[in-house]
Length: 98
Image (cartoon, rainbow, N blue to C red; front, side, top):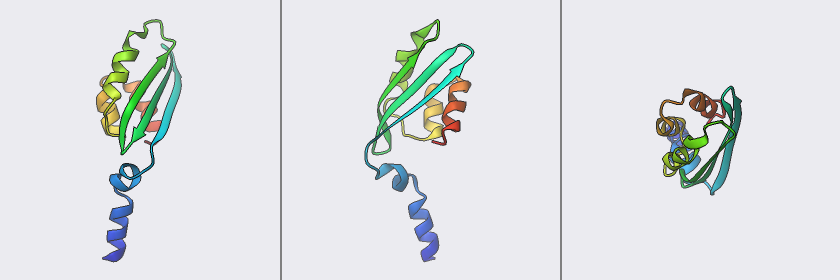
């Protein structure tokens, strides 16, 4: 029982991210439509600030995407939900093992 309680505590989201020191995280990838860099400032398990940089021919999605990511829990599912239909960006997030 003690081993299981320890496992649950140390594998929980709150232990891994909620209690951690603030940190920055970024992911960059080149796609056929252009290169993109996603950056987050994570504190208490949430994306407090987000930035999106791209050299895509139509960069109008970058600022709204950054706004959608701010305030998100720093989990794969929450970030992919915030991104929406951009499956290639969700694949990038999954590749980084967030």
